[in-house]
Amino acid sequence: MSAASVVCRKELLDNARDRRTLFSAFVFGPLLGPVLFAVLISVMVSQTVSTADAPIEVPIVGSELAPNLVEHLEARGVSPAAEHGLAKFAEAAEAVQSGAHDAVLLIDPNFAERFAAGETARVTLVYDQSNTRAASRVRRIRAAVSSYAQQLGTLKLIARGVDPDVLSTVMLDELDVSTAAGRSVVLLGMLTYFLLLATLMGGFYLAIDSTAGERERRSLEPLLTTPVERSSLLLGKMAATTIYMLLALALTLVGFAIALRFVSLEPLGMSSSFGVGQALAAFAIIAPFAPLGAALMTLVASFTKSYKEAQTYLTLVLLVPTLPLVFATMMNVKATSALMWIPSLSQHLLVTALVRQDPIPVAYVTQSALATLAAAAVLALVAMRLYERERVLG
Amino acid sequence: MIDVLSVAKRFGHVRALDGVTFTAADGRITGLLGPNGAGKSTCLRILSTVLKPDRGTARIGGVDVVAEPLRARRLMGVLPHGAGLYPHLTARENIEYYGRLHGLDGRALAARVDQLVARLGLGAIVDRKAKGFSQGERTKVALARALVHAPRHLLLDEPTSGLDVMAARDLREWLKALRDDGCCVLLSSHVMQEVEALVDDLVIIANGRIAARGTPAELAVRYPGRSLEDIFVSAVEGAAR
Image (cartoon, rainbow over all chains, first blue to last red; front, side, top):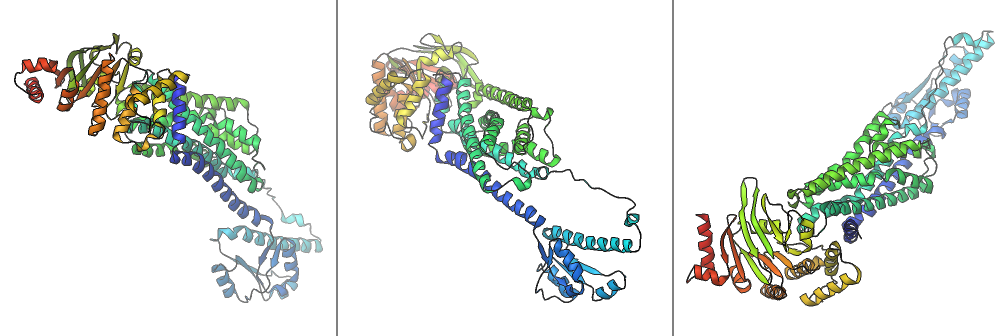
């Protein structure tokens, strides 16, 4: 058995007996992400979806004056609320301001007379623009009323023998090409963020314990007197960190697969199931990130003088891989071949594509893995160089 | 046999060792004696290949520690000052870890660990985790760990510091037993009584240089009518002048 694997096995066993390490690696990380994600999704879904088609009730003051209008509104899912007790504009304004109602429709007392006379009949929509929650409802009420007006106008023109098209000199066709999935890019950014974070958390304490911890409890110096190259010692430690990280990643993916059984991503336009296939593919995509994170954490922890100092610095390190995600989310970056050279960003883009069920070129996956592993090798070599120095004893 | 040949080492502007030469013979306990900061630990760390000398070299059983550090490490056991154990591993696992790093495995390793456990009286604690060990128990296990590959050379940095009377006494007995087996034992200390009770040869080191060298009897002849402590003080003061 090689010395590196002896070291690796010892670190695995040693850290498996540390409750804090186990908790943060295999409980906290794998649980936090999926649970938070599931909660956020169900909130978002209930907000965006329920408001889209559900019938809404709106108090209509003077509904008896315009039965046809009310009927038209009802056909479009806007029904008059029974028993609202409002009679005047002031009352309606107060009810909307206080939040008792999202919006109130006031039908002018002269509506019927003016309507019969062929004059412009008035309807007032009372709403609160600062109430963003009600925005989509207000929009629907407004659209329903103006469609009624337009329909009647068209009929009037026809009755007078005029082609209604004379009114439409220019027609604007709107075509929104954003998909629901594209709109939920923030949510997807969070998915990869949680996956990468949980992966790093998996090796966090092992990386500290096997470097700064080893120095602090003064077991490093005797270890350096064993007939093993320092690079082998470090290789074993980084291998153990990587194994913990991969385990944490696997558990987190299982957590997501379970959590997403209870909340559906479909209303947000994402793949309906995050099943075994997706989980395995996501594991394959993110796996190369584990040795990179292990090398980075080991390197940083090796610089520090104590366990506490290592904890402080590594907490900052946890943020580093998330920066590309923030950038990608804000700029709405799409996967390109050039971006596959950037570790953590490439994993983010690939996992995002995976969940959106976009096609993923195999070349991208290979490129991402190669670039990430190359970065891991460079950092590992730097860490090994560092361990050859005498200052490593602290 | 351990040969130290004109070893010099500086840390920044501090000259820790300035051309130190001495020999520690097989079958003898050699004491490296000196005030704090004299260079004892630096000297032992260079011998254990943890540090590299700026000048000079040393040989462990004829193997050059600068040219062939890995081979030299196989020939020696090292007990650094305050050596730490892995608190989550049992005493046995701590010892076995070093055994494996020395290339032992399977039945040979188990037999060697059992032998050390019997010899050092570790039976009661061998399968307990090191977390709750007393200082004496920790030192015992660290010593067993340093001896797991049956080295013929043993380096110990202040081995009895922090030990109670009984534990220190036990340790001295084991070191004597190892010497009687023909091992070359080199230890550092600044405790005069311990040195008097234990060592066969003395190397007094001060300000990075050898201040005096010889058996206690030889030194007593050179500095007549004085206790070892007096000899130590005048040697150190002589080196400072």
